[in-house]
Image (tube, rainbow over all chains, first blue to last red; front, side):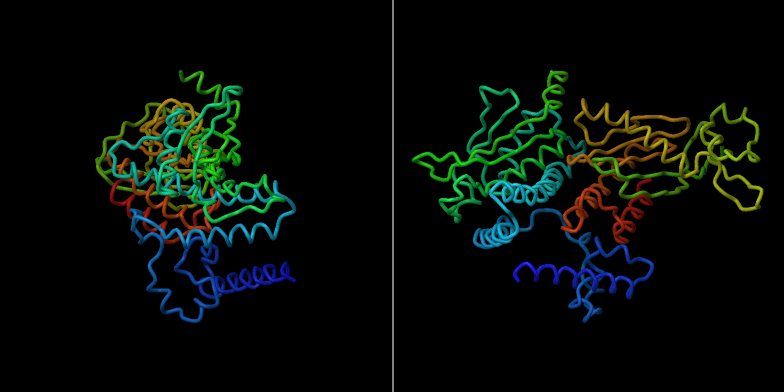
Amino acid sequence: MSYQQPHSRISVLSTSSVSSGEHLSPAASSTRFSLPSIPTTPNALARPSSSAARPSIYDRPLTKPRPDVSAAAFTFLLSELVQYTQKRVSGINDLERRLNTLGYRIGSRVLELMAWRAEGASKTPKREIRFLPALMSVHTQVWRAVFGKPADGIEKSVENADEYMIIDNDPLIERYISVPKDMSQLSCSSFTAGIVEAVLDGLGFPARVTAHNTPTTQFPSRTTILIKLEKSVLEREEVLK
Amino acid sequence: MPSFALMSHHLFLLSPSDTPLYSLTHYSTKPTSTVASPLSSNLPNWSTSAFAGTLTALSGAGSSAHQTASGTVRMGGGQDRHVIQMIANASLDAIEDIMKTQNAMFLKSVDKFNEWTISAFITPGNMKFVLLHEGKNDDGIKSFFTDVWELYVKTMLNPFHTAHTPIKSLVFDARVRASAKKNL
């Protein structure tokens, strides 16, 4: 039953958005994906006058509006997100993979927005093209943009040249999550791993990023984000040296 | 060439996987000095050939309007859609070479093809903005790209947008056109 509901809701939404698009603007029905000013829900359809006055996403400034988002609101949203995902997966690996995918969607946006805020006013905006500075900016800038503080450490694997680790002693994501004993390998920081993966991917350093619990007595929720770079990245770094 | 040449600009937004998400053709009449290609004047009129457009375009035959057989005025060589797309696509090789070693987002005049100069802008997330232009106008192009970048970031913050969604927003289109009018 619980699986029935989301399906029917999705189908209702999509049919209504198609019909509203056709109904309101036959020429531009395809704009329904990216134009918030074109109503796509029945609720918005009911009051078309307000939708005309509603500002589009292009009217909103990109500069940071307020310093912080409430941690409680964030935790609540994340909790729902994990529950939603968990209902739809068959195992821990699958759950981590899906959380990673959700994080990826955040990461690709964080990267562009962060870079715009940092470089948008610059005369000669720069991109990161070397791996180590990029990793440093993930450790400080990305963490600061997403969690409000830099991560606690970066390590390079001794055994494998293509492995790097970002360490967070007390990840915000796991602060109010206690994983049941039978799922002890699960790390909800897979969400963070997805963010890191998207940022590195966007900058041109494709990698596989995973999250692992590495508790210490002092920091019981200490988490390591493991970055395994693709071969091409190391080869490129060699050339650029 | 008259001092008020009709200049055309062609903008393409390409996703990291090189899918075209948005394209724009913009004409401006800013006074600019263009140098007519010597090759174009030596070429006979190909208008009877089925490949007329392609050949005149590849020869770099100016951007003056030609009178076609059907009597309608159409833009002359270099204005054919498929040729423009081909030139833009061909420039991607040059862009990808340069972006590996240069960390600037704005890459001015990365490639040249007859009368076309190609400038590009690479966002941190590896979106590529490619602009084909005829004249030299680095500052204008730079501020145009900066505007498009801001609009693109706003677009991609929309949860319904993915890296492969074509940008069909009318507001986006209008803003890009406004910036093109101002800067190009």
